[in-house]
Each structure stands twice: as structure tokens, then as C-alpha cells.
Length: 249
Image 1 (spheres, rainbow, N blue to C red):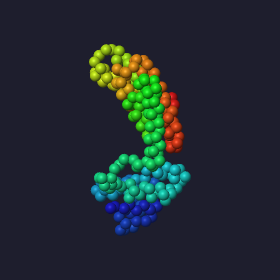
Image 2 (tube, rainbow, N blue to C red; image 1 turned 135 degrees about the vertical axis):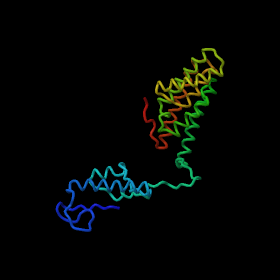
Image 3 (cartoon, rainbow, N blue to C red; image 1 turned 90 degrees about the horizontal axis):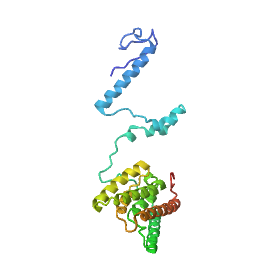
Image 4 (cartoon, rainbow, N blue to C red; image 1 turned 30 degrees about the vertical axis):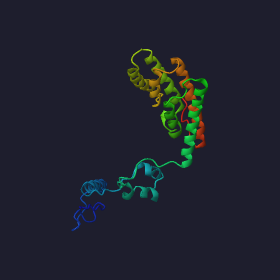
């Protein structure tokens, strides 16, 4: 590889280095040229030998560069060994690590308490308080409290909006099978437009097409049950030390 030796103007050997001569470029021109040759060298090395220089990420070195120095830790984290492709065996899962047993138990008990409470209201009032989508809602509230889908606005608003859509589609009088398909699709659009997306609520729209009780009473029951789910979820996440909700409205 050609090496450009830069000396002060008027002294030292030239580019070949085998005979003395005056420098053929001034210093302010030779330095940028030397950097260009170094960059070209890096590109050729990366393409031909696949052993590029370590690429220091901005996130790992921004704080150190602002202070005017690079710490040993930031250099070590950007070393070629750590930035190279991982050789994880095929049988090792890429899923997140398993939660602690205590966290899983608290989430399970919170979900059971909420669904049992709504089920008890069904037994006492003989009204359809407990419907299958609520199990999926509780799984989001206590198992994925950081997701937008699990926030109170989305849980309550999503179920209410979807139940209204289902009731309106049911009033058309078309076959229940096709009405359920139409209600589920329209519920998605309604939740998106109202910014209350909650995936389990799409199934609520299908149930609202032909509810067990009076249609508009079903909307009220769904809204009240969703409030109960959120309230129990607040308690369960507090026990686990999980921030919930991230926003109310």
C-alpha cells in the first residue's frame, strides 16, 4: 500500500522516500489527501477482506465526544468483536427472557380477579357482562401494560366503539354470518379513526351484531365491564411495580 509521507514544505524526502527532494505538496493540501487515501484503503479492505475498521456508533460515544474524550468503555463496546455478527445456534429462541415467577403469578391473579368479578355480575344480574374478548383485554392490561393497545383510553374506548358498530350493523337485518364479518372490519376502521385501537374489541363488534340481551343495553354493559378490567389492572400492575397507565386520554 502506498504511504504518503508528509513533511514540512521544503524539507524531507518526497513521496517515494528513496531520494531526498522538496515536498511536492504544501501541508494544508497533503493532510486532506492523506485522509482520503486512508478512507479508500478502508473501503478496499472492507470489500476485499471483509475486515473493516470498527465503526464507532454515535449513541455509544456521543457523551464521551461531547466531553472531549473517549472512554475505554465506549471503545471496548465498539470493538470489532462486539459489533460482529452473532453466531446464535438455531435452537436458541430470540424471544424475550422469561419473566420472574412472582410477576407471572401476580398477572395471573389480577386477570382472574377481573374476569371473576365480571362473571359474578353476570350471575347476579343475568346479563351478558362476561364475553370472551375481555380475557384478551386483561392479557394486554397486565401482560403488556406498556403497549398503546393496553391503555385505559384504548381498552374502554375500543370496546364501546366496537359494540356500537356491531349494534348498528345488526340493525341492518342481514345474515348474522356476514353481518359479523362486516362489523369486525368496520370496528377496526372506527377504532383507528377515534385513536382507540384495541385488538380484542374487534371481536366485541361481532358479538354485538346479535347480543343476548337488548342491543343498546349491551353497549352499556361492555363499557362498564371495561372500566372494571382497567381498575383491576391498575392494582395488579401497581403490585408488580409496573407503570400503568402511560396515558389516560
